[in-house]
Amino acid sequence: MVDGLGQLYTIEGVAAGILMVFTAYLVISSTTVITPQDIHIIDLQLEQLGNDALAILDTPDSLGEKSLLQRQIENDGGNAFGENFSRIINSKVNPLEVDNLKFSAILYYRDISSGNTLSIPINNSATYLREKAVKVKRWVYVNPVPPCSNPFGLNTRNQTVLVEVLLWRG
Amino acid sequence: MARLTDEAQWIVMMGFIVSITIFILAIIIGESALIGKTTSESVLEFSKADVQDLRAEIMTLKDKGILYGNPIDKSSVLEDISNLSLQRRNAVVYVTNWTDKIEHMRYIYIHFNNGITDYNEVYDEYDY
Image 1 (cartoon, rainbow over the protein chains, first blue to last red):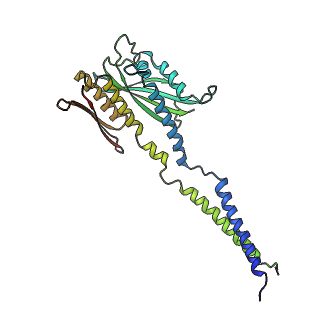
Image 2 (cartoon, rainbow over the protein chains, first blue to last red):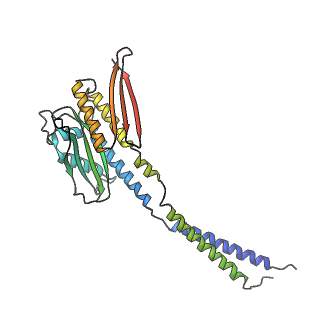
Image 3 (cartoon, rainbow over the protein chains, first blue to last red):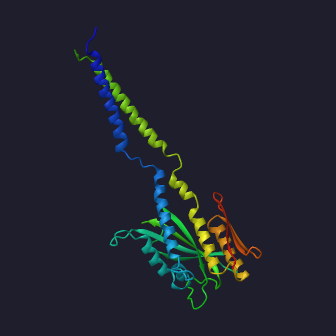
């Protein structure tokens, strides 16, 4: 016997199929599952930004000249570094806007008489209260011979010091 | 022709069950992404900046004439780098340089190893 029963089944089957596909679409498109792995993207961008900022500061304007970072360690002091670094990391495309990244910079150097690694704070824009931060570092060649004011009290010799900057969004 | 019976209710119910199953499966898949290694994680782990920075510093020392100047200056600067690397970067860094008088070449050997990344480079240039 031939009747229209099969057609009805087919129509309802198609309806159920559409329902399933639509549900799957809703689930996939409407929910963004934030997993802990995604925070690494932010860390990555922050670290890249910090490394770039230090690289900018440690690049001399022309060959043989001193870089800005070298001048700041030898002569200008921590406030000059803070101003420059803060401006670079907080720059946005719109010049009227500023970002709110905070940093804390420390200088590590080897004391030639004792052979120990000593540290001295350079500058910080806020107190670090265990926010989620990344650390960026940069080697800097310095030689704080007079007439440099040598604000960090380094040994007067050719040396390489390490600038470590803790960077976080505050 | 077409008749309405309660057969359709079963089909609709099956549709709902399958839909809910897909929903639950989606949640499970979302959770399973907790485990795994992301691209950004790998990039963070790879010490690209350390290697680039070290190399840039050695090139600065070369340009400043430290590497080919006073041997006391040179050894103390290289000791700065090795000591600070070991203490602040957990990396073994060894740098040495030599001049080949016969070939008129100058070489700089840079070794960096932080346990994950091992980097070795021999930089050479013509010795005028």
